[in-house]
Length: 428
Image 1 (cartoon, rainbow, N blue to C red):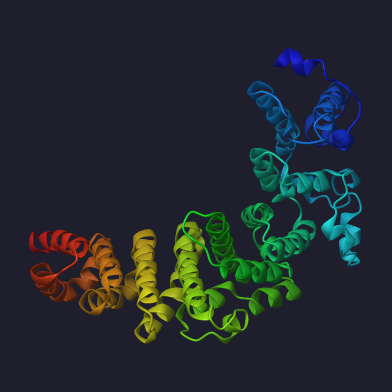
Image 2: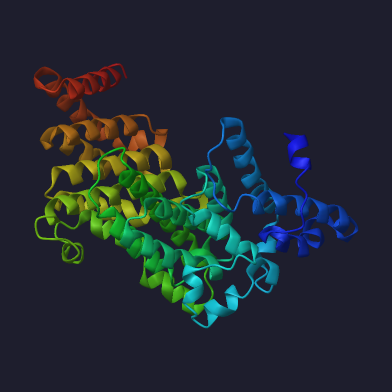
């Protein structure tokens, strides 16, 4: 393979722009000539493959083709973030920052192939590209300055959701997620994030089946909203610019998710659907909101865990009593379980109410609710000492209920879980 690659050094191709700034940025001026040869080689790799990613060839050539298309991206991956920060770098951004600042919408749909950012975006959004190449390019797009990336991804995601282009939707979501992780508040506070949320809402309202391509795209939407929520908790304290602060406050993801989860009637969602679609789609959308919170439990940074608990747990604990649909109630109990499991002693102020919710679901709920309630009870019983002491008074009631369930429960799954919990309680 090395011998084959060594014979392809040609000084042409779109990746030539990399050579103008990389030596100074990461390799030093003294290595300019050596690095120039490296970039010439990358140029030849990329330019010889731009005609199409999937010609008719054997497996070995296909693997070589994939490797060759990944090479330029792997070089870009070596760049420090400060290189992506330089909006004045013509080689990296061409005229994109200027055009976006003057609301030149043409650049939102078609990116220049004369700059690195444009090439990364084109690779990430190309439906004819290798999946591994698309994924790496989308990851690298997440490092692009938010002033360039967010408007473009907002526009592309909106168009992709309108045309149900699932590959492009997933690429846009992955780039946005990476940007939220890498750029944090700078990405989240961009005004066009609200447009990304609207596109996500559209995708989450589509009917889907577990495991199909739409459901996979919806999982990406859920993770993206979860990262937005986690970033929001940091952003509300970190944002200094008044315009950005207003943008964060106006479009609170936390409030949005909780509202759609606990409200039995949702006029905004209903207006987006045909009358026959509303009941099923609305329930499905509310379950997605529960999954956003479950995902966020696993992603929230340590410094934001306490405000995360205080903003979410009391509101859902208060609202669950009024929720009519048993599936949504079950989903709320699963949110409680995730918070107890992942956030541990931080749920201490609410642990007694969580135990009451567990007992109520075991006593009165559907089979799904009883299973979720049993899991929540198990998680509370496995909590830290402070939580156990706080709920100790209610465990006697829980034990009596478990005894009743074990003597009369028709569901084998519920019976097995309750039997194990009863053994644990009676052995203490």
